Length: 408
Image (cartoon, rainbow, N blue to C red; front, side, top):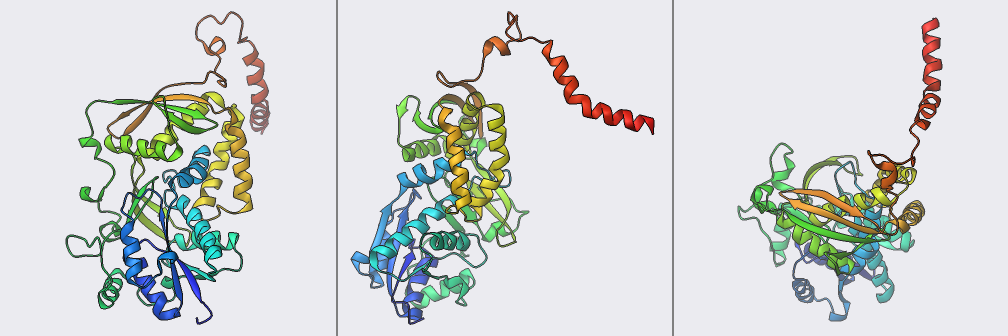
């Protein structure tokens, strides 16, 4: 342990990482550098600086970085170009933030001369894998300290007791005196785990949700929204150009207002257990629906089907922490190539928890040909007689098999 001279800690200022900061100082007797990422979690980050100062962290060793634009531009948008969904429902809001945090941890370690990085992910979770695979991919020789795999503070109650003993301020105690939810927030989503949610049969408390109203309390009037796409990314809303982070921020606001994006999920964790979590992803839910709509008129049929075939594999790569792997990067290259023609606009209607596509068009890249698709007289654009031969050829193998069965 004494070989560690300086460690960069992914530090939120919450219960877990505040305890870890003190524990690192006491256990490893090393200098601690704190890194707090602003990923759009919507919380004041300055208290994290004040807490770090209180524990003797030098001001120049406290990093609080605004990563919102990089997060959406370089991680969220590329993921949504693939229409990525894990196990049919989860939009990977926590998973996609981890490779960026790992990247910045390594950058700060290089900048400050640290020989180790540390994180607050538990030994039961997926995040330990995501952080560490990312760190090793970017700095193979880095030492990683994972306190949850070393200490005996293996419950919220023990953490609270440790914090009280060492004078660590505690935020967000539950109003009934129990342990707080385990929450993670960024511009893409907010997640909730633990406490009441550990019973998968129990409905989530309405008071738990932070970003969305319930669909029952959403406005009675629908709201229409135009989204403009360029190379598969949203670049404007209702005609107003926006940066990636601005796009997602506005979509979260509109989606939350209309009760869009709630999810109650039991997922299969990378470490082998099932885990119940609740998620709010209002902007991402709108993005996914709109992106599929613009692709429906701009992508070749077989290219679209190939993307759908590859998407579960891509989703698993992100969920399992392989963002920086050569296979994910190779697959991203293919996905981004398909997006060169994904240009145009989509109109959606937001209403009581629903995102309803009501229009889409591309002036430059639409493959929809109304002269062929029409149910009216197409003036010879499509020869319906061609379908007969096509059908017979595709049925040939089944006819041969049926004739063989009939002869037996």
